[in-house]
View 1: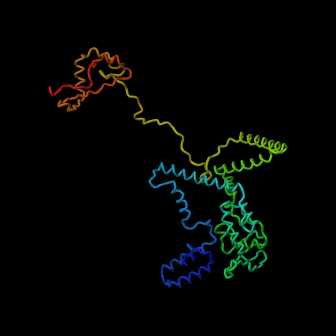
View 2: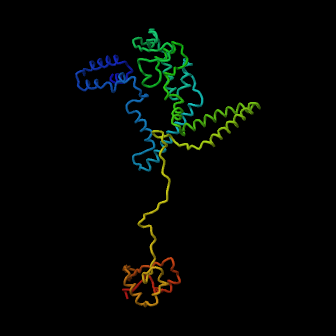
View 3: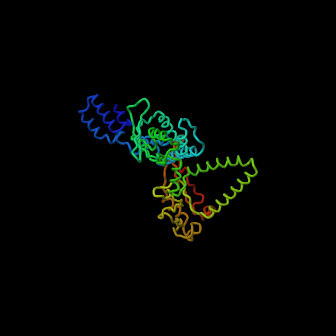
Length: 409
C-alpha cells in the first residue's frame, strides 16, 4: 500500500485519503517516523511532485543507467591511462548508438497499429522513434476513455473523462475552443512531455487529426538536435553521418526513377551539376574551420591535445664533455700526439698507472688450484685515437686481465 501511495498517479486529495486509510489499517498513526515521513511527502509522493518535468526519471535511475553502461568498459583496477582508453571506447559506443537511432528516425516509417490512425501518423511524423513507441500504448489506452461530461465556460471547456469499466475514477481536461491549448489534472504532459490518454480522448471527441503543437515537446522531436546545432553553429559527427545517409537514400531513389527516362535523366543531371558547382563555389569562399565533436559550454571548441615538441633535455647537462689528454690532462690533443709523451719514461708511466688502478682479486677453485685474477680497467680512447696509435703506446702488449700467479706453485 505504501508503494501505491508513493508511485500512484493520484490527485492530492486522493493521496491523502489513501494515506490515512493505510496508517489506520496498520495502527501506526501515532508513530513519530510515520508523521515525519508524511511531513516530507512533497519530496517523494508522486501526487505532490506532479507538474514538474522529470522526463520519466526517478531518484537515481539516471546514475544507475549510466553506471550500467560505463561498467561494461571500465573496471576499478584500471590505471588512469587505461581508464581514458576504455572510457573513449564507451563514448564511441554511445555515439554509434545515437547515430543508429538518428538514422532510424530519418529513414522509413513505422507501421500503424492502433485504431487512431491520424493521430498515430502525426506522432510518427513529429516524435523520434523511441518516443513514438512510448506514445503508442497511450493511444491504445485512450480507446477505453470516455468523456462523460463537458462544461462550456466561454473561452474554454472543462471535460470530465472516465475510464470504461471504472466510473468512480475521473479526470478533468481543460481545453480551449480550438483545442490548441489542452491541460489535464493528471499532469503527465507536464511531467513527461507526452500527452496522456485523457487528453487524447478529448482530441478524439473534437475530431482532431493532428496533435497540437502545444502538446509536442521540442526535445522529443526529430528536429531537436538540428535546432540545437543551428543555434551553436557547429555540426556534430552523428548529425553529419545521419544527413549523409539520408541524402544517399534519397538520391538512390532519384537515380532509380530517373534512369528509365531520358528527360528525367537530363533533368536530374542538370540539377546535380548545378548544385555541385554551387556547393563548390561556396566551399571555396568559406575558409572557416569546422570543429570536430560537440562544443563545450559557452560555444567554445573542445579542448585538444597540445602539439608535440621535441624535448630539449636538461640545461645543466646539455654541454658536450671536453676531451683531455690522458698523459698531461691538457685540452687540444690526445695521448698519441702529446708533446710530453717522449720526455716521460715508459717505466715510470706504467708504474704510476698501475698504482692508480683498482685491483679486484677474484679466487676461483679450478682443479685444486687457486687463481688470483687481476682485472685491469680498459683505457677508453677518444674518437681521434686510432688503433695504430694505441698499439704504439706505452701499454702496447700489456694484458688487461689474466692469471697473475698460481698459488699452487
